Length: 176
Image (cartoon, rainbow, N blue to C red; front, side, top):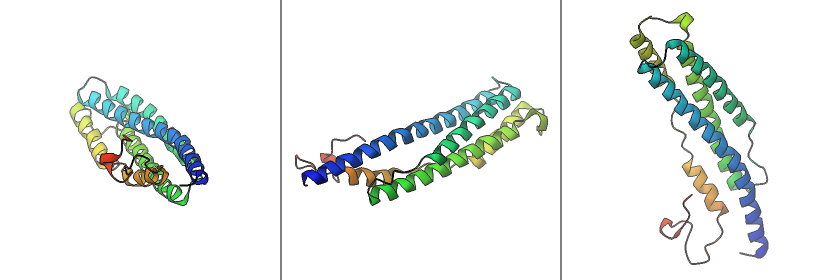
């Protein structure tokens, strides 16, 4: 690899690292929101919070989920990346945006089902079962991006100087 090629690759790595830092913040927010969602439903199922508290927490969580969804809709893949990275990260971002939309929808529908003004039953166990049904029906499928991220990392890897290979995990010391 020439010095010019190496410098170009290092620039590509820096561009990706900056983008990935922002992307990972959004992933962390999605994860936090989803954990909060399950914690709210578990607390209601255990009868440790009321339906009114459940509704209020879900309403705030819906706002948080909407914010993350909107932030992700504004996130773009840097065009300065090579075609392989650009196309792979575009797939990652599209999958993540779809996931965020599905997560927001699940939270919003669960909040609607918890609305004290429109409850189907006054029985807490039945209310909890209704919320659990919405959760099971509306939960997004997993966010699977490992294949695309592997392509990006492989494309941005510097050649191993010690005889190792980026394709051979047994000689690749990277944990990412």
